[in-house]
Image (tube, rainbow, N blue to C red; front, side, top):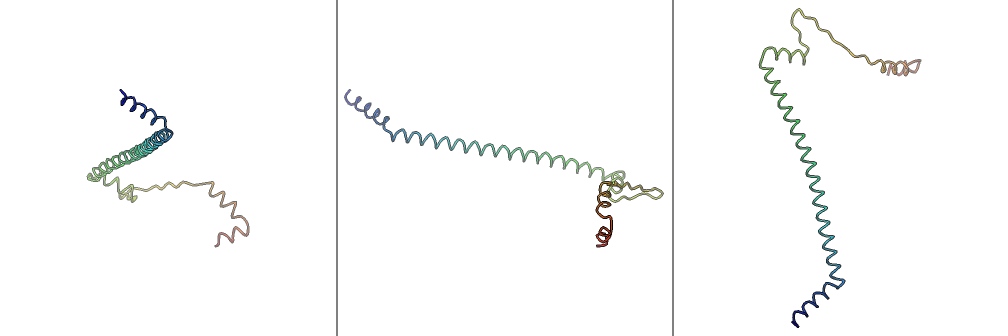
Amino acid sequence: MGRGMRKERFFSKLIRLPITYIILVSLVVLFSYSAIKTYKNSKIAKEKTRQVENELRELENQEEGLKNSLNDMNSDFGMEKSLREKFGIIKAGEKSVIIVDSDEEKFKEIKEEDTGFFGFLKRIF
């Protein structure tokens, strides 16, 4: 029993030492820092995963649209539609109508700025 008591006293004295508390607190701080760092990295990884998934969905939608466009181009109707949209080609006997949007505000600004002799000179240069 004498030996067992000595060991218990030794451990109880060891636990009560200030250095033991300092070591334990240091370990807790170290583990906490590691846990926080891991959490932050996990959060960043989840955000990047979301971004990549969104980009993948957009690319899949784009691929589907391109496949549909390619299928349309294989038919005469689709090819004609594409040429009409891109190049404004019309068949013989058809008339073309071009609609132009007018920005009245731009014209008002130009009229207000370019009035008078200095406005005339400004328009020349």
